[in-house]
Length: 85
Image (cartoon, rainbow, N blue to C red; front, side, top):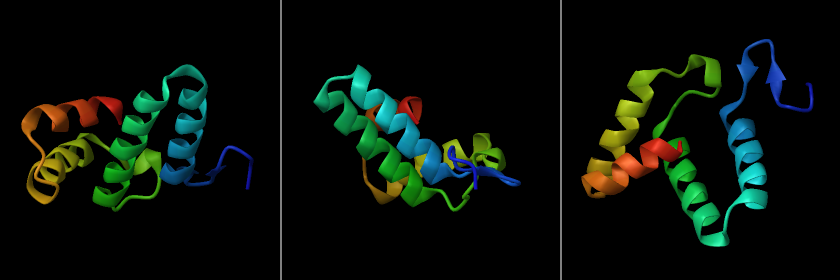
């Protein structure tokens, strides 16, 4: 498999998240990076798809519902987490 985690199906979500967080660790403060890490962990928990190419708008809407209903977050933090991911 190529180094970037891409194969015939596309890029794995876990690899894309890892790469994103590695890049942001160099650019952001620790608190901001920790917030990104948390939001993306929640997204991985809510998303059943493994490849970025399989994701669509419905997955982001499902994440919003997951934040509200399962994590019991207020609407504003849900929106913020949606923007990060």
